[in-house]
Amino acid sequence: KSANAQRGLAILISYLVMVGFIIVCLRFIIPQLYDSIRELSLMIPDIYKSIMSIFEHYRENSTDMFPSQIADMIETKTLPKLFELTNNLLTNIVPMLYEASMSFAKGLFNLFIAFIVSIYMTIDKFILKNAGKRLVLAIFNENFSYRVLRTLKDCHNIFSGFIIGKSIDSLIIGLLAFVAMTILKLPYTVLISVIIGVTNMIPYFGPFIGGFPAVLVALMTGDLFHALAVLVFVFALQQFDGLFLGPKILGDVVGISPFWVLLSITVFGHFFGFIGMFLGVPMICVIRMLFNDIIDFRNKMKELDT
Image (spheres, rainbow, N blue to C red):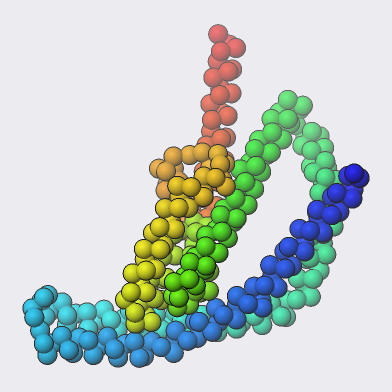
């Protein structure tokens, strides 16, 4: 019944969940990702030889299904560049993961200090919030101050609602992908599930961005059935997320048309990369809210003048 006890218990549960999630990632997910990427990088030469043998077989038993010039172009230019790019990507990811792990180990002390500071900031959240309100009231007049505070509150609701809702949505999608691919006995379930879950943070384009490497990984295993199964599954998962799960979790947090969503992803993604594609939607929502507030205020002032 004590408010302080409730806040203390809430903070404790939040940090226990966060620490548990980090431990699960370090103990189970990251090692499997490392092993999967390393195994794929070692498979590339064999996959390249298999595809080249297929083209040699086609040349010996050509049925003129498509012109020989196209086959020569694919064999001599496209395939070598594609496999070189894939090989460089996979071989560079392993050292990057190793360097990231070493940096994490070296920065563990700083992480511990930040963890302690975040606890005190969470405990003193309302004190910091009231100090910010007092600062705004001290700088501006009363009417404008409350307008600023209300706008900041609306911005906070948009960003927090979108980030939390999209994170929960992507976590559920990643878990569903892992369960379904485990049942279907598809290869590299952890790697593909992580790719699908992370890219799902990007609205609209995310499932397709995550689906391409998932299908590519399935193709690299040499089983066309697995690749088709992953393709169908990713499409079905995207429809389920877009039509049912996403609206249920996010609700009316976004509330903008698909045109503005695509525009925000394109523009902010061009300038800020992956972070821009993820935060573009709440940013365009904030811009639209501010624009509508300005228009409403101007119209109200004109009505008062008349």
